[in-house]
Length: 92
Image 1 (cartoon, rainbow, N blue to C red):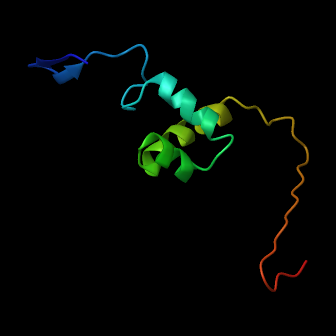
Image 2 (image 1 turned 90 degrees about the horizontal axis):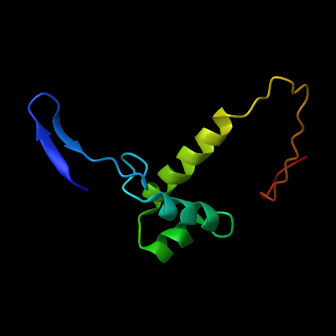
């Protein structure tokens, strides 16, 4: 993307409508990562796309955080948790 050097604001880069600011990836690529994450592990995705898993986790965490921020749990009265563990020596 084109960049300019401003005496007042420093180096500025044109914002691409197809990419999240500062992400380094296009929205289409991020959508692809999100879709893959429903089926395979992040390490498998990293191997498939040739990218480091920590960069992929940043994509996943950003979208999960955005989704959680829009949820409204104010009417939730009770929650249930079902834990299953196969760890040796685990007692229920």
